[in-house]
Image 1 (cartoon, rainbow, N blue to C red):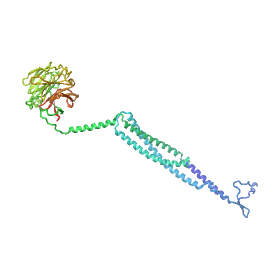
Image 2: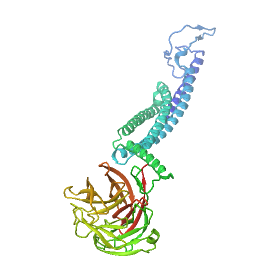
Image 3: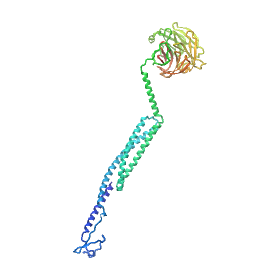
Amino acid sequence: MKHMWVAVLFLTRSVIALTVTTKVINEASYMTTPYLTEPDTTTGVLHAPPKLFTNVSGSVDDSGTCQCSVYLPDTTFPVQKAEKLEIIATTLSEKFELELSKVREYSKMIELYEKQILNLTIKVEHMEQSSVSYTELDFQLLKVEISDLKRLVTQLKSSLGGSNVIVEQIYLEPVSTAASGIILAFHQHKLKESLTLNITNLTILVNELESLDKNNVLAIRRQIVSLQNRLKECEESRNKTTVPPYFPPGSCIHRGLLNVSQPYVVKLNWRGFSYKYGSWGRDYSPSNPEEEVYWVAPLNTNGRYLEYYRIYSSFDNLLLFRPLYESRVTYGEGSGAALYNNFLYYHAYGSRQMVKHNIKTNTAALRKDLPDAVTGNRFSYAGVLWQDIDFAVDESGLWVIYSTEHNMGNIVISKLNETTLDVLNTWQTRQYKPSVSNAFMLCGVLYATRPMNTRKEEIFYMYDTSTGQEGRVSVIMDKKLDTIQSIDYSPSDQKLYVYNDGYLLRYDVNFQS
């Protein structure tokens, strides 16, 4: 800029000097010229002939003086054009200063955009290198930021585009004056092109990241949302107060087990916490199903001997520890006892005998071997010792659940004559008995359980003796402690009675309509 002003000043001074010289010559041309041969008054030497001008026509006045006129052409120096050029240079200088201030402002904006692009680049690199899952929202936010950058750079392009025209005009005038400005504008233009290229590359990279989705993040997220919606619908339907269909006790007009309620903790068994093995339940008398008779039979602390049991005449008496009577047997084995029509059925210790015990007289009414039954804790339930023979009661009568060598340890179901203990019919399943935690009968259907964790049990297997068909179900039972030692179903109130590590639990049963 200083160079431009020095050039203009120099040019102005030259024009002024030339103008003064021209005026002096013009005035001298009208003066009287002395004779060319007139001697100098000081030295006496003749004047040399002037060679400044060519010969021109003139005239001699009365006094003998020669007069002539010399006209200088206008093209010798264009004073008016020089003044006009000075005005144009001043105008261009002002415009250049204005455009240069714009360029400085755009330079600051470009620096800001470069920082934003650097932040976005770091984000994208982190997304490429990290195993952290990104949601669809992350990609959308990146796209919004890149769109904003594109819009701002487009505005910058249009602004700098106008500036380029001015720079070209300056370049066509004095080059030395605008050289520095043109160089600056050139660098800004290159930076603008680099910025645009970076944003384009960044857009392509984000689109590729979203389309590739190496970890199937978006698909998994959508699937999780779908599952959450389904879970919410399931919970809402579960929380709806719906009255389960009623089926009279002792009837099997339903279509099987649907689910069970939360456990009702009745109390700890009457012998104490150390007696973790045992059984309990309600008697079922087909002739008098409404009669309330309950039994509780904890095993000894070794988890094998059945020696003492109590009979309660009502549920309230059970809660208040007021037994009808307490009796002793010598000896039963395992937690597979069941009460049916005022008789306690249990497995005799160290044998394959079934015992029918009269609770009113506390005497063994009948003993009989169970054919082919394997004993000695060989095929007991998982986590429960000495339950090789397990008695069960349902609406149709008395059952026994066990295993044989012939059936390779799989569950065998036999229907018993409760009077003679004869085996009326037998069904061999394909479910391995030591792989289940317990089992019970309900309307002629065997249901087996297995542990899911320390607080949940699953009814997972069924075998229908009326059709010979077996299948899988999934009914979750909550429990209070780790191990379920016995499960007994009572047709009198359609409840499950569970002995859970010494605690007495009770569940309501819901049926399919």
